[in-house]
Image (tube, rainbow, N blue to C red; front, side, top):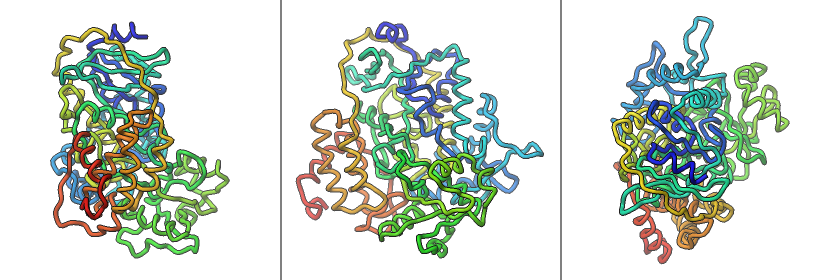
Amino acid sequence: MTGRLDRLAGRVAVVGSGLAGLVTALRLSPQPVVLLTRAGLGAESSSGWAQGGIAACLGADDTPDLHLADTLAAGDGLSDRRTAASIIDEAPAVIVMLETLGVRFDRGPDGLLLLGLEAAHSRRRIVHVEGDGSGAAIVRALVAAVLETPSITVLEGVEVRRLLMTDGTLSGLVCATGGGAAFLATHRVVLATGGLGGLYDATTNPTGNYGQGVMLAARAGADLADMEFVQFHPTALDTARRPLALVSEAVRGDGAILVNEKGERFLASQPGAELAPRDMVARAVSAEIARGGRVFLDARNALGEDFARRFPTIANLCRNEGIDAARECIPVRPAAHYHMGGVAADLQGRTSVEGLWVVGEAASTGLHGANRLASNSLLEAAVTGMWAAQDIAGTSAGTAGSSLPACALPPADLSMIRPIVSRHLGVLRNADSIQSAIAGLLPHVEGEGPSADPAIVALSIAVFAWLRRESRGAHARTDFPLRLASTERRKLTIDAILDVAQGIASHSPAQSA
């Protein structure tokens, strides 16, 4: 295996095969690309599990300015306006680009795109594929396109464990393969590794996704941004299944309501009710559960017998759990769903490390701010993949170094990290819980054992959460419930994060404040 990686030296390396990685590789054609994925091509990615579609202002009553206003409102004061406007403006072009790659979006009898409504959108602008199977259908089409592109070499079953830095310069990837460790020499790397929901017990993400891109970039010295903002989807199917199945926001967009075990519609007085921004709905659902209650999604009146036609994937998921969504209420709970933070990246995906680009959920571009607007994630993944490819196309391969002996690195072990994160860094946080998280995580980071890699990501969330002493968007602190009049995004390196963590661990919350 090492010899084969040597023959690929100097090519652009794209790590991850979700929507962002697939688009990046395809848009780089005909430039030679190595696409590395630890699972099968397109597998174990949140993109493939997305039930929602792509937000694009295509309706006669819609404009980019309206989409931007909705995005900024959901971002709760932390979205970067220029970034958001630029990405939103690309939405129509993204739909055209994906259709040229084989994606077939849902259209009505008149041939026009069907536009759905989701929470916090003021217009119908969600473009779907195969109803609630959008992500899987999009990924299938792009995987087929990748397999037909000669310039893309796909390496499946290869997990990148480290970015190798030589004299402060990115020089390659240290990988784990079925045949042992391997090294790929390259000066150009794109991280498209997805989110970090696997750090939580209750998540809608693939359980192995703990923020590998964040870890890799952090260890290489890159800036991290907005790590505290973890979005919890308010309506995951509340069963023993792991990961939790998602009940798309589009079900509420079609009129389903949330009720507690008493049948009370507890969001009725909330502006927007069930279609309020996700952070507000998640907090309300969490509060009902925290008091010992249960929460259900009631689609009986809104959809009834039409549920299975409109949402076949969700209907099947419910059926597998013995729930008839047309006639019964669906038990739901919040679950870690999306990460607004990540590796700080500009509009071209460039990071603070020369030669390193980050795209999709692993990146923090400023689009989402403190809280992602529904269906903006697949849009961002496609746009950032397009733009990173365009930026990389203007670079040269440089001189690839010879293969270095690849050190054996143990696979990540989340078993001791997940309970800490789930207990202390959930929907509602406070100084005591955050300090407990830091105290529990820091020894794992400093120990450099199998738990160290996921612990680095989790510790970053905790430190950023400690420093943000307000409640904003997806970050809710019960000890700082108010939203500050003014605030800003924060960027830190792993060294700075460790300095803060060590100070917090050695002092009480009051002294650290």
